[in-house]
Amino acid sequence: MFRNVTELVDLAESQQIKIAEVMIRQEMEVTGRSREEIFAQMERNLQVMEQAVEKGLAGVFSHSGLTGGDAVLLQSYIQKGNFLSGETILDAVSKAVATNEVNAAMGTICATPTAGSAGVVPGTLFAVKEKLKPTREQMVEFLFTAGAFGFVIANNASISGAAGGCQAEVGSAAGMAAAALVEMAGGTPSQAAEAMAITLKNMLGLVCDPVAGLVEVPCVKRNAMGAANAMIAADMALAGIKSRIPCDEVIDAMFRIGQTMPVALKETAQGGLAATPTGRALEAKIFGVPLNERE
Amino acid sequence: MKYKSVFDIIGPIMIGPSSSHTAGAARIGRVARSLFGRKPKWAHISFYGSFAQTYKGHGTDVAIVGGLLDFDTFDERIKSSLEIAKQEGIEITFRKEEAIPDHPNTARIRIGDEQGELELVGISIGGGKIEITELNGFELKLSGHHPAILVVHNDRYGAIASVANVLAKYAINIGHMEVSRKEKGKEALMTIEVDQNIDQSIVDELSSLPHIIQVTKIVD
Image 1 (cartoon, rainbow over the protein chains, first blue to last red):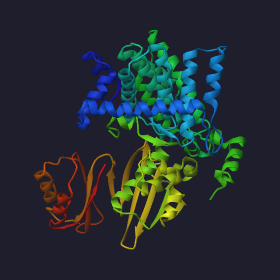
Image 2: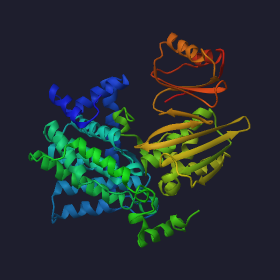
Image 3: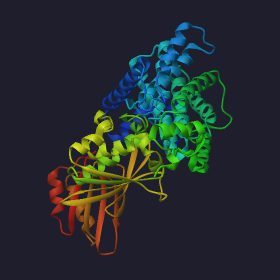
Image 4: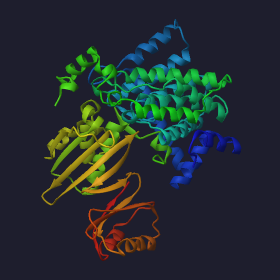
């Protein structure tokens, strides 16, 4: 069983196999299940992601009314063609937003690695699908690659906002997506690790400060930026750029930052954006009384 | 390592909005239901830490009750679990606790009916993964990801060996095992996670062993 990114990359490069294949073999070994069974379960996850993106792009709104409809706005903006950044990156952003809008509306999603960060991996995957034209099998592999990197973060740091802040959720998701993007685009396992390191470095310190304790503000837009971050980092790694700080050390830094992060900024709705005048006002409107004054 | 499967990371398929506060809470509730073995008449649910601060926003209350109703994380009925519980005559109370827990996402569930009661503490560690840390006053560690049996027994020599022997006879491999007791020589609890499913006949055989008081099976 690989314990860190170095071991994961070594396993892939020494056997000349993909990261996805390392993950599949480990899953077979640990669970005793067949390759077909494992692959089918991941394909089911892919279907749920695809349906969530479609639903979000059609337009959904949450109960609280705080989020919804932004994926639609972005898609119609892309259609007009006057965008400043790039089409693929905006497509990734809109599909990440779509997924999280569905999540906020208590729709069905697949946690990747969590529900609050569920938009980044599918957002990037379904955006590059248009460009790289992967087979269905390669799309499933993308999820195994993302899962392999997420597995390392979960075991060596955290994927919980309450334990490690948003860096542990959207940060992890973006790192996982960046690595999987690199592998799908034909990059090496080492390049995938570099992409994850570059992404995660730019997510360090991100706090979890949901307004009214809802997975909506700023979660939906953080997924948007997580997707953008992953796309840029993947391109940087594919260009041959390396992280000066090795991936495993970045993960360790994230863990230590999460440990020292104040509780008010770890999914308690007590600090950050949740504690702004507008955040408190929204909270009071939704629940009748602000969280900090509630029984 | 806390996470063993890729599906702990990519998954579960679930109703939003939070894997730890919604899906994890549903799983904690469902383990309580499974251990209790039947629909409870009442449930007292206490939230600690982040659960206490944000349970309304995340639908943690709705999800944990959904679990008590035996709904899985992706079951659409979770959304209306409070109404369903009311219709089924289950009396439910929630408490927001001030005490600072070891883990920020902690819930304590007490459920019961005229025949008995059960109390457990569950933590949601991220991505929908949970652990049960306390059951009826015994400390334990239960991931809820493998079939498991809980054996309440008298704290006597040979009790553990006799249980292990029966499992070995049926080629059931123990993946994780813990023994916990409140006091030397009194009641104790074995928590055994296994790789294979355990038939009811094996549970009955274990129950009939000397010093064994109660055996409960938890299916994944």
